Image (cartoon, rainbow, N blue to C red; front, side):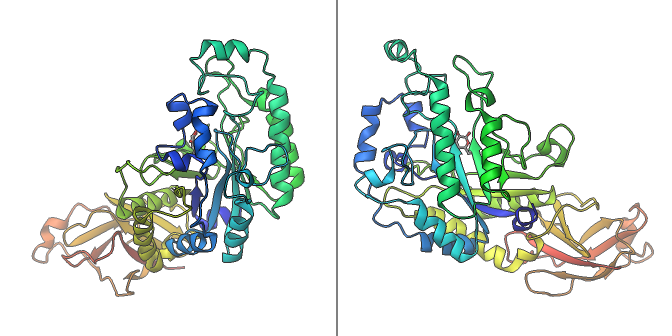
Length: 419
Ligand code: GLC
C-alpha cells in the first residue's frame, strides 16, 4: 500500500473510440446509439499522433506518479490485442495494440501501472440489456436478446482480465468499474460478475496488486469517491474504518475527450483539491481524455503545466504526506510528514496566522516555494495593535505574514516541529 499513499497524485486516462465522437465516453448510452450507429468511430479510429513517451513526460512533469488506463470502457472497445474479441485497437485502421506501448513508456518513466477495466459491456452479445444499456428503450431489441446469458459474459470478463494480468508485466492497481446490484432490470453486481472468483484470480496472478472497491465486495484495498471532495477521512472510508481512498476527478466533467465542453477546472482549484485530499489522508487521480488523434489537447496541457509548476516547488508537502492531528485555522489545510508540518493557505489573511497548539512546538518556519523565513511572533497584549490579539487559545503560534501573498497558486508554510 505504501507506494500508493506515498505517491498521492496519479493520472487517469480515458481513451477509446468514443474520443472520435468527442462528446463524453457515455455517448453510446446517452444517445442510445446502436452498434451500427457507433461503428464509424471504430472504422475511423487512427490515432496518428499517439506518443505515450510524451504522455508519460507530461504527466511526470505535472507531478503524477502512477497511471490508471482504461483497457476497456463500458462501450466494450479494447485498447489491447485481446484474443477473445476482435473489437479492439488492432482491428481499427490503426492496426496495433495501444496498451503495450503505453505501459512500457510509463513504467520506463518511473510510474506505477494501474488498469481500469469496465465490468459493463455494451457491445458483448451475451451482456443482458439493463438500465444503462444503449438499447434499454428498444423493446424489440430487448425481446430479441432476452436469452442473453450473463454467465457467458462473465467468462469473457474473467478471460480478458486474465489476459491483462498475464500479458503486461507487473500491474500495481486493478480498477474495476462498476456494480449496480440493486438498480433496475437485469441489475448487475458481484453475483453476475462473479466478483469473488474474479478477485481470487486477480490476487493469484498479481500477488502485490491493489484492487479498488467497485466489484460490489465492500471497500476493497482502497475506495474511489468520484468527482467529489470527501468532507473528511471517515466519510470517504465508509463504515467508520479508515481505508486508503482516492478521489478521481475530471478536468471538465467528462472523462472521455469532449470537444465542446468548456467547464474546465483551473490549475489553482485542482491544486487545492489535491491538497485537500492529502490533508484528509486521500489521493487524487486526475483524468486526461486524449483525442482521436491520440494527443492531449492544449487545454489539458495548460492545466497540467500549471499544476506541474506548483508541484515542482511544493512536492514536499504532498508526496509521502498525510493528515495531521493539528487543527488548521480557517481557509487552511495541514499535511504532515514526520516532523515537517505543512500549512497550505487557501485564502490569504491580513498580517497574521494563528496556529493553535503549536506555540511551543515549532523550531523554524519558512515559505516552501523559496525557503524564506516566516517570522514567528510573540503576541504581547501590551504592544500597540496587539491589544486586539487577545483571546487566542493558550499555546497558539502566531506567524507574521507579508501583506502581499507570494505569487504561487497555494502558498505553503513549512513548519519544522521540535522533537
Ligand atoms: C463511472 C463512469 C465513468 C468513469 C468512471 C470513473 O462510474 O461510468 O464513465 O469511467 O466512473 O470513475
